[in-house]
Image 1 (cartoon, rainbow, N blue to C red):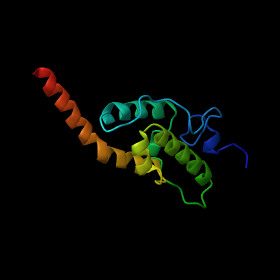
Image 2: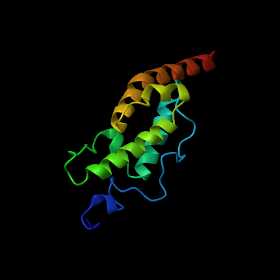
Image 3: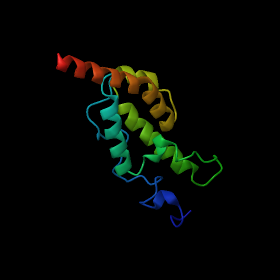
Length: 131
């Protein structure tokens, strides 16, 4: 199949992967731990948006049927985003998400587990600085 009409060849498509992108690419620091979810998630959103991959965590890049012509490109991009997420969390958190297959699933799991704890930690820091 030629690249004409194939979104995986369109540099403006979320299904396009630049040849320099790889699973272990470092673009977010520090890694997610139990105290920094909000800042970490903001960095991830900015980085994925710059790479045109934010759709994989916000749910707007719906998985096509395996018989659809974009399925292979979608699967490859999803796996790339999954690998980035796995690489940018602490080793303890990594063990809890390693077996999840979808970037959206990982994103929602991390948000549900760590967004409230981070807020509580931030409030505790603010309260201790007032004393």
